[in-house]
Length: 245
Image (spheres, one colour):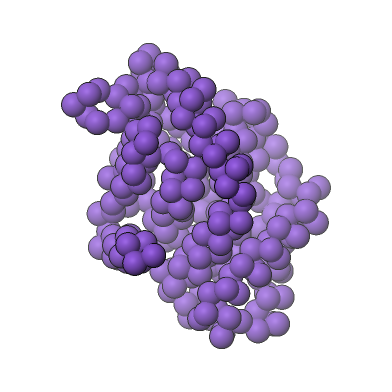
């Protein structure tokens, strides 16, 4: 399961702040954000993130690494959410700015490294996941509860993972920012595209469903949908934008 370490990131505060400043620089590439941001806003963002750092969940164990990294992304978005919401920005507007920053960051990863991650995901990692799926393994990793689902030819996916409990959900609920969760879930689109996950998903805990239905197919395209009209509208806009590129 992994042992939770309280205030683990307090010792890494300066490193995390340096990374957050890099995110803010990427956020400035968003035209609307660039027009609105001021020095005082940036100070608020830093101050807010510093408040959050000691409360970011951290779990020991190599299998928790990916979840820990994802929770760090959520913590940065949470800081932006708190500040920009005070400036009367909607969750959708806040997430669009944060998503653009994530996209810019992923674009900066060298193609050679992306190909390496893609190979690791689609070879040893994929085989491990498929073995767990065949055994219908259920496990808890940190604040995440997973059920592995075997793929079938008629289902058109290699293996699946149902998340019946989400660490992002728990963290944001504790921080009074549950409304942000459906937007955080959209980060998987960029991550799947960047690293070749071949992810398909039709429901999430963030949308109010009983579980998130992650389905992975080697060489597959990213296909994500939402039952929330406002979230699906964002997905459709991204699809249209990608088609124009």
